[in-house]
Length: 257
Image (tube, rainbow, N blue to C red):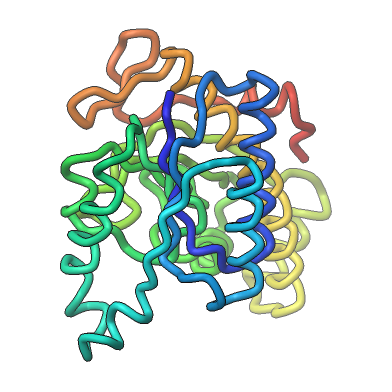
């Protein structure tokens, strides 16, 4: 499987994720390769994104850099005004490369139909399928406010509905035990300290399974156990509408809390 890796290179986690996925490829845990890294920054915009580019070049992975900031400023446009125009330019730049799938790895832009219609585009979202939309902070807060004990993360296809594209895979976690019960009881009564404690516990556990979820999903896609055809997800040939639950696989190789 040939992967087109989209990133903004915003933080150290972006570099670490790229390194860990590429390590998995080199160790044959993923039957594929990264055939292109696309970054919506130019060299010199950020020390961290420059590190991502340096690593990619060291590994001899082709790189395309195209700065959103410079593109918009040069035309006097806001992002909402220039999104599709920007994506058309991105599409023209990546079209000459050979890849099967685009993975959004810390890519800080909403992708328009210019990209998700012609290509299979997948993304990590820190929520279970058909649960919460939005940034990870909002997802966790809403989970706690609703008194939910189960949570997790999923890989989903990108389409016009933000964070609601067809799920590909997911990992389900749960908070249990006396301490958790007490924290939820206190949080329900409005105790801010208990809410913050729950927030930190949930984020720590969810964050810890994100990379294993990504690696195992790419592995299953690369071997054909999970396939995507005509924007539909199949597991061993059977169409699934809620994604593949790979909690057991992930937790067998990674100690889920």
